[in-house]
Image (cartoon, rainbow, N blue to C red; front, side, top):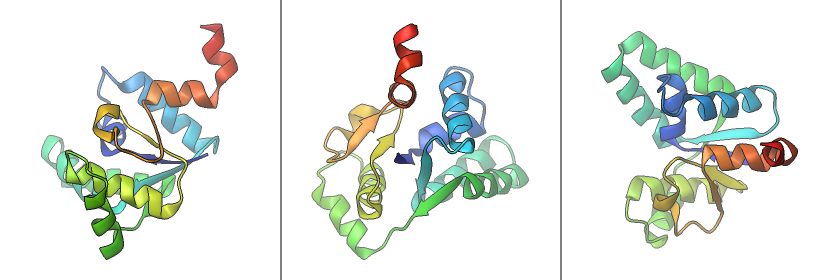
Length: 143
């Protein structure tokens, strides 16, 4: 399955945010094991760099971007993606751009903690926990 990983989930993993860390770590472990194929939106990388630099430092921010580029492919953002994002009628344009870039890339789903922000998405949207359950249904049913 080919999925776009929203900035919030990437930041949970990169900044080791305790409240969201178990699901983020499990998700990225699955990405490393190639259980799924991960993508990030090109504009997310600049946002991630900015936030990691603000919370840590410039070296950590560059390392975070470099690490993501090893684990994930990048969904391009171009004129058509930006126009299509407007037509999605999302409350937040940044989320709409991420969704439009995932659509343009032909991805199967988006993984985000803010599923309500992607309510208008024409492709599947999962929370990290729900996506992990989708990837491993036998494990989810045993819990």
